[in-house]
Length: 546
Image 1 (tube, helix red, strand yellow):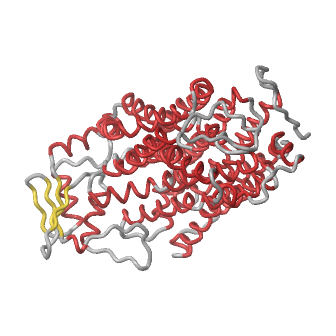
Image 2: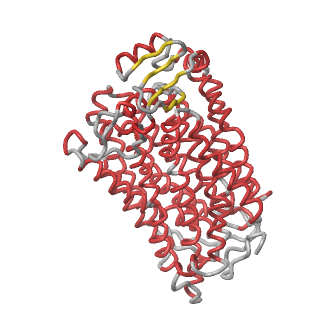
Image 3: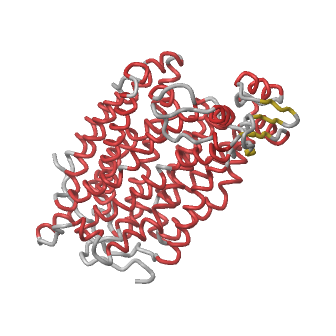
């Protein structure tokens, strides 16, 4: 039976049909995020599967570059599917996106690895990541618009916040499924074939999602607009080439979604990678820490969505960005001391310096057949993957050298450098018995709190910025540039900054600067939207200087 929905009168309770709209839209979006974030969660693991051996940092950066490819293409998916959504309708558009996403994810589970087909493996992987990104570019805007156009004005932030929890729940589901696979099988079998299971499972989720969404009907606001002949014939032109809509798109990006994107990916994915790669915590323990913080923090998305209906969306979003930018450095330093106190102590007592001719050193963001690694590259790779901050000294024409306190090793030799670090007391892995679990979890919870502040009210805020006839297109592009480009590039850019500077915390400058810029632009040029009537076709001036 197809569910018929209506906009309930202001002040009436939420109807059964409205609840089903939220449930069906959110559930499908959870599964899409699960599909998309499987690769993100396994990116460090995929570095060894789909890229050549020889330089672990280069392979990791290549894996992150492939991870970022899916994000880079999301705005193009927003353009394609946003246009379809504004011309044809919300429901059928996000039915298409879930088909595309589920199919691409299933095929990742069937891909042969680098050891089997060589360079064809990463090329196929990148291709499927691009398809995933296109699909996700159309999914979020459709789901958020669909729910918002069914919601009452006074509860729009609360209703759309259920869409906002889907990304985190999809991430948590990915952690849960991958963690379960790693528990029930040994490392060898997981590397051989077990990693495919989470991707293959997506086929089951796809069938269930399509079944649920087929029971939905088009939104009443869109239906009325079409019946009255007020729909846009050129949503792309109206959104991006006509004033003032193009101004709103730019302000939505720079004054809201860019900061939200970097805060989201820092508080969840970068924190996970930092635990595993830099602090060298066992992957299952890292999954557990981040998974618990995500699970505890999830209700806060709804809480801040509800709060935004009372006090406004913009001030909550900008406050979250401001707090994140002001506290990331001390939070990550505290996380280091809590998770790997031996590493923190080693860094405090042992100054590490790598002396080399800078002209022979490089940062290889995407390794390929064209890549050649110098001794300097190999040496910096070795120190970087240890999770150790080190100072670089340029010594033109001189041989490379390592200094750890008073110990100095001339020339590159992994065995001798390894012995030097061991002799200086470098901890190979984080000792679970020394982890301050409560403090580590509290730090992660604070970062998740920032995520919920910036993300919980965001769907309602974006929906309210644009009129119905171009809403799907207009809101999707700034959202996916902010999240796909500014946020999705974070692991790659932050890791490259760390590799290029030798400072394990230097990568945090990227989210701090972006979040700070968002606070300034949002505070100066944007105003509140919570009382906007989204059923009107004329739109509303949401800029302070309009």
